[in-house]
Length: 195
Ligand code: GDP
Image 1 (cartoon, rainbow, N blue to C red):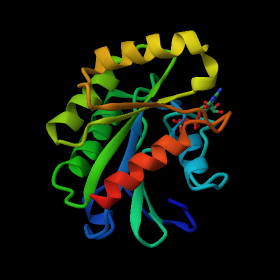
Image 2 (cartoon, rainbow, N blue to C red):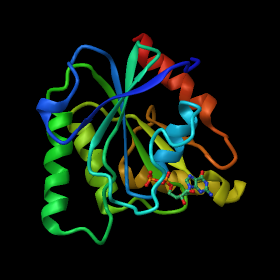
Image 3 (cartoon, helix red, strand yellow):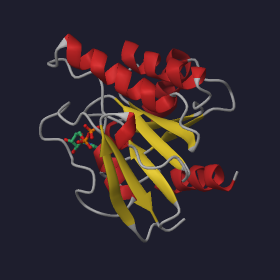
């Protein structure tokens, strides 16, 4: 896949603001600061398409990017930022669930986790939701440049175990800093879009 065109077509906090449910969508979810904006910017080969966070947890919208006029990448709001209030956290949950539930054109949600750390309780909860809605199966482990080759397979093992992945589920290590791992991710995106 070559991304030639990427346009922000909707910024939503509720269902009525989503674009029409007629074009294939692949969403990205993860904890604030996991490196989601950096990954999306590199995917679409642009700086600052998705904002790289100076203040983590601030973006509380679902952003829809139309790619090559043929599918959409959906940037879900980051979770797990300690300084937000309980009501904001609850609102986040409602927002995510209302998107996940009954979005016909949604093919898959790619879950991002930091390769250095054991997935958090919220990562696990997010992944449980994805399983519930049948949207699970691809995990991207970010910031792969921060660990050694030896640690890589060990940490991926911990991620697999903590999220309860099955053997056919994929964990793709990427580094936005070193620009590695993207080819494998593109292969998965192509596969999803062709199905
Ligand atoms: P978001 O909150 O999930 O959108 O995360 P950002 O993309 O804003 O990144 C959070 C922080 O992690 C920023 O300081 C980034 O520069 C840094 N970061 C993101 N990706 C990588 C990576 O692959 N390697 C390293 N070393 N740092 C990264």
